[in-house]
Length: 275
Image (cartoon, rainbow, N blue to C red; front, side, top):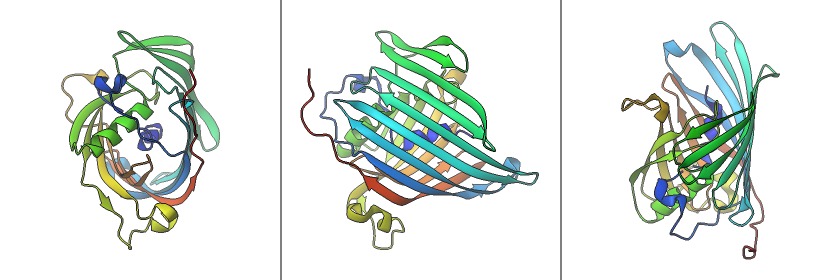
C-alpha cells in the first residue's frame, strides 16, 4: 500500500511554470493534525476484510526557513488469512525556494523494520538529480518537476483564482524515490462547513473557515504509453492555510477515509527573509 504518498495531502505540486512563482505565496500554517483512518470499501480482489489506523502529520517552517514535514501513518489491515500492522514514518525538508528536497522514510511491518529510503533531490537546469543513500547509494536523473510544498502553494493559488482543473507533476521521494508523478487536479466551489460537519469540533477556531473540495489523481510517468488509469486518487477539503481534512484515499481495489480528530496550530514565523 502506498502510504507514503499520503504526505501529499498536506503538501501537494505545480506545472513547470511554478518553479519560479510569479505570485505571492500564501502563508501556510505550521500545525499538527491527527486523523482517524477506517476502511471505506474493498473489492474481493483486494482480500481486505477490515482496516483501521491513524495518521499524524506535522508541518513547520516558512518560505524563509524552508519547510519540514514529519509524517506517520499506522494501519492495521485484516485479510482472510491474517492481520498485519504497518507503520510508515517519514521526515522531509524542502528549502524555501524549492531547489532541494531531502527525505527519509522508514517502513515497519509488525514492528520490524522492512525498508528505509533516504536521499536528497536537487533541481537543476535541465531536470532533477536524486542522490540516494539508502537502501543503497546511487543517483537517478529525472525530468523537471517540483516538490510537495510547491504543489500546495500552486494549488491554493489556482483555487484562489477560480481555476477548476489543471495538470502538473511532482517528486515526493516516495516508494523507491525514482519517479515523477503526473497529477490532474480538480478544484470545487469554495464553501463553509455546516454545523453538522463531524470535523467541526477538531477544527475549533477554524470551524467557520471556508475550504475548497479537491480531487487529485496520480499517474506514474515512468509507465508511459498514455496511461489512463491513475495509480490512486485522493480527495479532501483544503483550507486557505494549507490544512487538509475529510480525506478519501482510493487505491482502486480498496479505499479508506481519514477524519480530522485533533488539530494543534503552531506560531507562524514572523519577519522578513534575511539575505
